[in-house]
Image (cartoon, rainbow, N blue to C red; front, side, top):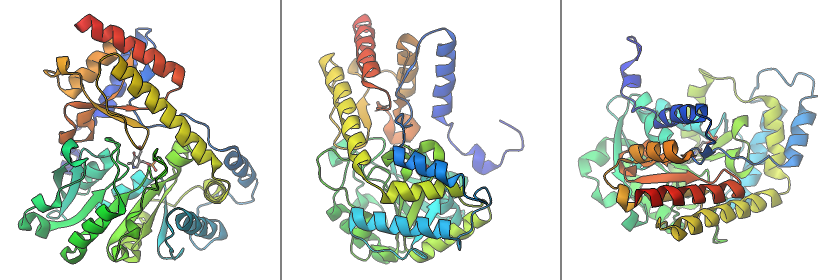
Length: 396
Ligand SMILES: Cc1ncc(COP(=O)(O)O)c(C=O)c1O
């Protein structure tokens, strides 16, 4: 660690995914093929109409210049986001004040903490969680307060367990359903309860809704902005990385309370120059064009999830079937219970070439679990199940 690194960076837990990446590289160098379930990095091609829109946008004169919020390209994107939001959730938003385009939702979530947390402010973060939810708090210099998510509570936080003092010191809470890594879902009733609880406590509630399209029951996953009074203190993050398979493009957005958005926007204005304008233009096509693509890929991910879950259960690794996302969250097999999730991940990777994400990569309450991201084709999933079968038999 460089001697001069800031304390807030030193306080960050080791980024376990970098460690897993290093192991993957070492295993690859031995000549073994890696089947990579470790990162939620979609492997599918974006919709063809979006790729076409990008090619066309690249021909627009001046497209390579910095983006300005007053220009038509960014205005069109803000309007497209409001239409998408209305279509998905029936919520009306003001495109000028209640919508903020982001260079990916991860960027926006990091800036949310930076914009709002002082050194003595607490942020309530359910654990396990997508890492930027808690790492963003630490990077901003705030105090992280983990709320354990338990399987027996369907991975929903129990806010009644928080002491009055904890609540008093808290300024921010970040939720996310459908949930990465556990794949848990929630209903609007849950959001209503959270908003009722947070209303008079002066706590900003942010909801990361990256997987709202990835629900297998056919039921719609709610937005927190559907909850009563939520626009007074809530914002919601979305991304095009998952629904439109555009992870490397870096585009997401935040919607909701205009004062909160203005502060994130202010923070961003000192750091970045917005999104590449050709990407904004293509994103308009993604959000307002035909949505059959989204249904198609959700079906495909469900097939992958089922293949893995059936496969693992078939070889004796008991695994619950998720109702949403493209993740499978499962306890490490009982015979390995003496190992940490990190140790099990390393053993599995070195012996089989199969890379998963260790539960503790998502925070302390992820211990005992691993996560499979179904971003590999079916043929590789079948191969992985076969290899895991041999691995488990050898350990019997
Ligand atoms: C819950 C959640 N939020 C945000 C992101 C990041 O999305 P983006 O690509 O928009 O930064 C991910 C990516 O895996 C995620 O799982």
